[in-house]
Amino acid sequence: QVQLVESGGGSVQAGGSLRLSCAASGYTYCMGWFRQAPGKAREGVATTTSAGLSSYADSVKGRFTISKDNAKNTLYLQMNSLKPEDTAMYYCAAATSLCPMRASSYVYWGQGTQVTVSS
Picture 1: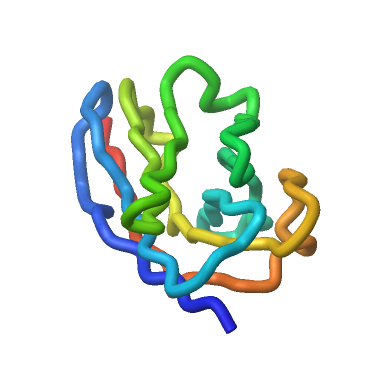
Picture 2: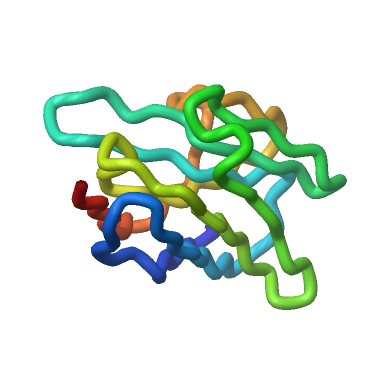
């Protein structure tokens, strides 16, 4: 069983930055960030494998950076140039094998952290 605990959400004005953190209790091959806005489906934001291979949703490419500190077993999401449409609950997730941008493939989930971007 892997436990994930997110932190770092908050409110920021458009153009601002936030960094999310996700502390993991065990090893998994793949970890990722997903988000869900009210009334919308959960969508993939960025994923990374234990080998350091990362993928991003088109909507965040060039603005968000996913990284992992293996020594601390902590996943990060640096979010720059934030837009109002980035407003959502952000979730950390982990998978044991593949690393797709599809939420249904992930077994372990954190409780979520709210990100609100005002215009």
